[in-house]
Length: 82
Length: 415
Image (cartoon, rainbow over all chains, first blue to last red; front, side, top):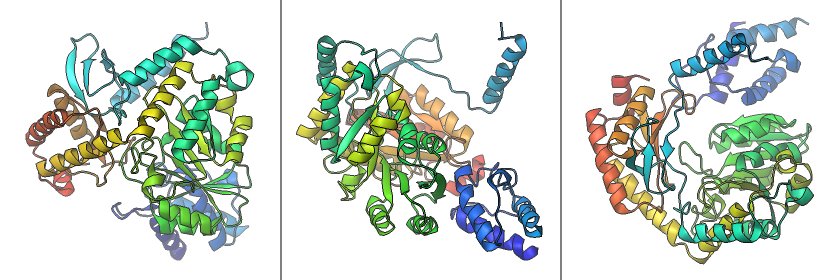
């Protein structure tokens, strides 16, 4: 679980942060905080699907579900259980 | 009546929220033509104030140029005021066709289609040329009109970090399986004034079989040795698949825009682009004016050369004064203040000193990136720039920001 959190956090930092941006944590609002825009969510979704061999339907990939690393982990776990 | 008190209250609340957030936009009434010297009524009802305009997109100073005004008058006399039609019914005159040819020659493209505005061109082009099997990969700082165009299109969306070619390459690899791929960028970015690395982007697009889209609204007419645009500056004339640009900035400043590029794509837009099909033709008076603008720019580079010199002078003056600028060499020169309130205060004080320059802050730019965006024109003379530098110095001293780093300004004023 902790591994997954860190893996996703690392990906988000690498993919979305610019050098001068501040550090982010598990609960930093990504979409509502303006770090990830809705167009950029697609690569995050693709990353999760490939990394964890899951398929997230578009209606589940909502801005709310993708808003923090913690909520993303919850979403991934939901599909890992299936 | 459906506009009940309850409905009215909902909108009043929204307006109050905008005001409370400090982002309510007040318009200033200009009583003169658009030029370096303008007369402004602000706030509404106050007496007219003569100020130097440092925030117009009038890069080449052609908005009120006598030759352009004369050509517009002649167009008005010979082709009338309006066409009362979209292009494909009975709204296409010979001069519309002529302008499309002239724009293609100027930009070095295969063909061109006019739109009522570049906003419309950007809103319509992606939906017309792409489908759900395709992907659009856009720079994260592209203009709002491109974002709207992307939203209207069913192709998959992805982005790359601003001007980051490694990241773009990763995205091209990620989407290698798509039928059509379009990489989307501004030529010159409107808020920072930096240029897209079009030479590298052309090479990447060739490597991964992607088309390249460039919005040249802040470039057409003055970037590159003969003002053709960012593609000229980077030596890739003829290699951009889709260019959009506006006639509302350097190219006369009235209105109108276009999609210019590969002939098949232009033809698809003519058949399918909704803002083209369902909106009126550009007025003959504007078409006549833009034809004259292209004529002026094709016979001499004098105006873009003057703009380049003015820009160098302005950047040097501000740098010597000790302001933090965004680096670059375009006539968009952002003076970085970082704090939103400071940007508003500096803008207000500059106005008092007779300098019209606007503060930009979140959500227009990122938090902590507030600034005064100055825009230089070939219509500026050195005495305009000198007067503006005196004012910037005075206001900079007042707020104690001259010679201060970003961190020092942030420490004092906060984000």
